[in-house]
Length: 197
Ligand code: GAR
Image 1 (cartoon, protein in one colour):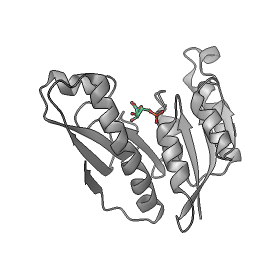
Image 2 (cartoon, helix red, strand yellow; image 1 turned 45 degrees about the vertical axis):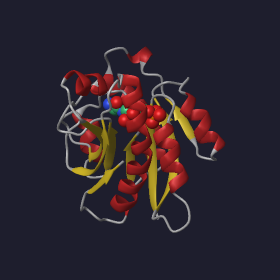
Image 3 (cartoon, rainbow, N blue to C red; image 1 turned 90 degrees about the vertical axis):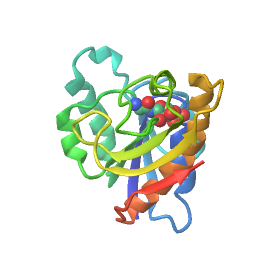
Image 4 (cartoon, rainbow, N blue to C red; image 1 turned 60 degrees about the vertical axis):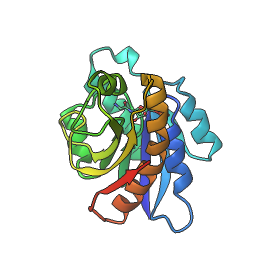
């Protein structure tokens, strides 16, 4: 059984989808949900699901990313995860942190990478006149929103979409894609999966 730690910053809907998927004959189990924001509402959802939680507020660390990560790492290492999932975790990680988990750290990003790494992905897709949008699960490397793709899910961009309506449509697919990508990754299957809405 693989041990999975999940990092969140907010509501944690992807985290909940991952936690709920790890039952029965799933090859992994959640061992920790950690956040850089002690007020992240996802922490309460994790506790309600019976998963241990930790919070390390990044703000007192200011520009000291390494200091923040060292404090976060103490919680992560205590949980002895095999796999680390970023699920709406909104802090950029240092190369040292990434190197420590390289090959066993996944992220979900709300665009069809390599399009639109970074922020405001849905508005950027709308501004570009794209007719397809979606999300990507990938392995985390030192380059932001880069790394081997484990899966993508596509949704249509509809007439009259705003960033919010598009985000909501993509999020539904995130909740399908991430659990499936994690399950395959935990089984050692490296073939990416592609889903359509
Ligand atoms: C999700 O849409 C996720 O793809 C995105 O944040 C949202 C978190 O929602 N992640 C990023 O933008 C990473 N750069 P959630 O907390 O409900 O899972």
